[in-house]
Length: 223
Image (cartoon, rainbow, N blue to C red; front, side, top):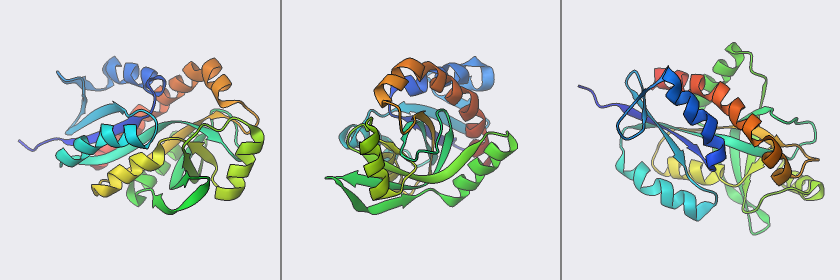
């Protein structure tokens, strides 16, 4: 029997995974004894990586290096808007990820895998999910102040900011695994990130649970 491919779905914080895990357990997927999810010939593993370079590297290094059947890494989660035109709960499909460190934009950047990008584009289009395609920047700290967000936008020209996607993408790239990131906007340019996530975190998590399972199935169908 052919060994199953594995799709990793990586979030940074348990809050981002909570409703998604419930949805995956609701009958869409079979559940293995170790808590993974099965769809056809794909095993789907939901990973909470933690935030920041060290935690993410520690979480993913051995898993990615030891499992030669990983067919895709999908990063899902919240991101803060840097562009004033972006609205709360808007979906952003990330085509390029930058790393902002030591108060400057680093030279390295990572492109989304073109095949995964097209699969996700088509899925969102067919399901009439409004979205934008654009750049994301990963930073060491959370950005809540409007002036700080505007300054970061001017330096990076990225639509949204998070604290994890670049490091997840780098780990996948190092192991030649296709990577894609899709984010839901948790705070607009004018919002304080911590306040909106605290107040609306469940709503955001429910949006993830509504959209992402079908996307996982589409990726699995192509694996």
